Length: 571
Image (cartoon, rainbow, N blue to C red; front, side, top):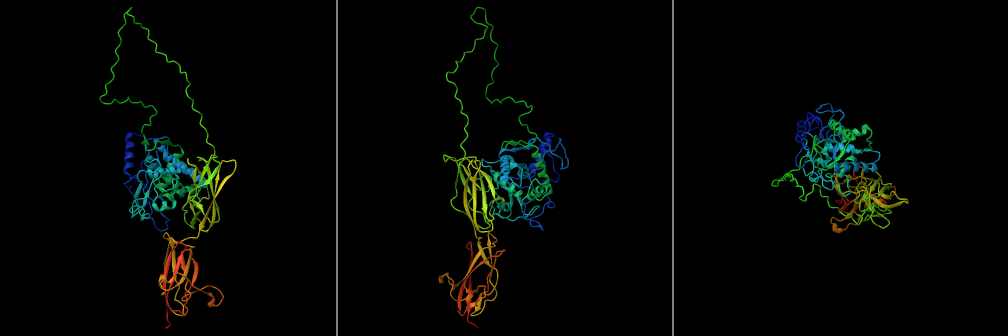
């Protein structure tokens, strides 16, 4: 997201007035909210989507971002951006659930993509800049924001112009896209990079665990190593193409690396607010209206000699010692370790080439007594020649079981080569190897739409050849569908009631070969779309039979085109 302020403000600890001014500026800056929008940055700083030479839109659509630089050394400083930030201020506090999401995303990516080495402090820096750590940790028990955090409408006024790509499903806008959630993903980027970070089976950009894991996966794209400065800068600029954005994120990254601490969700103090320690004097307890104040104790009267009173105090009554010793708390017991794995799948894992598997590999870890084993480590490993990977590009991931003993691997993305595959689940930490093989399959690629793209006249005289060749294009979800098998069949009659079997007379194709043409006639062909999803049928010839015929072309996936062929008497 581009800069919010024409003149950047540094938050210091100079005085209450300075702190109030900084907070007022931030409020006026248009930080993401459920209903409001953020002001745009200058158009000169941010390229519009679709500009010459520009790649796909960034994660955020280059929207304005939420925060300023971290506090700098010395009160009231207005130093250049490369000033090293101070540590220990209230700004270093991160809400508990948000901090947990950052750390879990780091651990998950360390297992699934160890080369990347994404640090949680970098995710924290981006989360701070994008949404102020989900509005200071205002989340429900699942880590989801009670109301969506929305960026501005990306209508090209001062920033990118991105027409609606999700039908308003994520951002509620059916005309243009808007960045959504704590990590500010635009819908089309979320469709590609969205992740299930909390294991609930959903990918929700408004959930801090899902959004943080997705952000880390995006930063790790293109086989990056984030300990390399060039890769680190490219990853951040891929999130938002702004040099000032890069500079701001790097400052927060460095700031959190020098120290950060956990604060309660939704209660992050403003800079300079008292934290309850360090020399503050507690105030007296308030008295509710109408409650009488206790009267001061009157001094007792002096006793007279010989009246039976004594100046010695009366000793307090003694309590007899208990006869039964207090109960002792037994020491905690360590649960028995997992000893077996059970397949939780309801069938073979299967998906067409290039698509996402509908079912995720899942197992349950159990103890010897067949009860669920929580906190067990299960490693999932993909084998086969299909090119299939887990989301994020890894072929090996490690998952920790939940209280019910269940472990679900990330979603599978089918490779481009049909064939069999195996997902091997291995229970770690056991003396004897415990493995379970889950079988899967990548089927032939499919198409959901087939359209004719030529304008050849489909009328021919008997005993001649149709002019030109029939061309079609197959697509899947609006994109070209390469490598899709298709069957072209010449059918008798113009009415479907005439049957779907290949005709035994009328138009025909010739198969390649050196045999006589009479031996190479066929009225049923199997073809495959090229790299752009195109299908070019061979020439159609006719015998001496006249009449109306049908040419039916059907692809894997059920896309169908039926064309009418007319054969007339010779002129």
